[in-house]
Image (cartoon, rainbow, N blue to C red):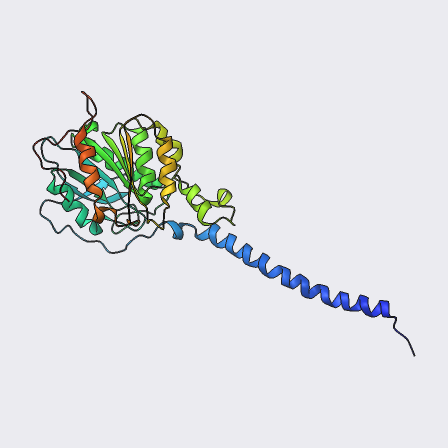
Length: 299
């Protein structure tokens, strides 16, 4: 009869245990790899949420207009002409927005004589194409060029970027002459925000859409107004605080609205801060008209 030593029995048990431990170790590694692959291939679905339904303007003072881009796409735009002596606002919306859902904003602007052009990003609600960072920058420039082609002076254009739109707005204001830049709930950069939201993933290696507002904000020569809600759970207010620190020049203002969340700023009184900003002027050669004769301040 063959005897098995105690040492042999222990070695056998260890050999049986190692495959089990290996499998246990592979499970989290596999899940992490799966998370990497999902982020790498489907990251656009974390950024862009295009509404499919297209709606026509319901107000007589808003016209639906086509806005062609330099790379061959066509955007659905809503346009309202400014009253004499008032600026025109180029509104660059968030990642789930479009002209149809901004009716309250449009009414506030129109009531104060401020004109506007808002459009659906490429791939959003009737606009052609597919959204990506390069495309959204094309779209922002297309909106600006559309206004300039209608003889609206560069100094009469106020670029207003909300949330995702704050990135294209910042770059546009750095590259083109504008009367002012308004950033509503902006990020420092989308890269920085995603790194903060997904700290365990190598976002810096994988992210394609980076929207580096931090790179462009220091090149903006126009006055800058940044407004953020202290209850913003999507883009923390520290993002805009850091961006504000990089803004060039003395004509910059940052306002934190108590209790406001990411998408409630317009409802909560954003324009109580916008009107004085637009009405102030900036020296003898103030870039934005003061809309003199119009009653600013009411919501």
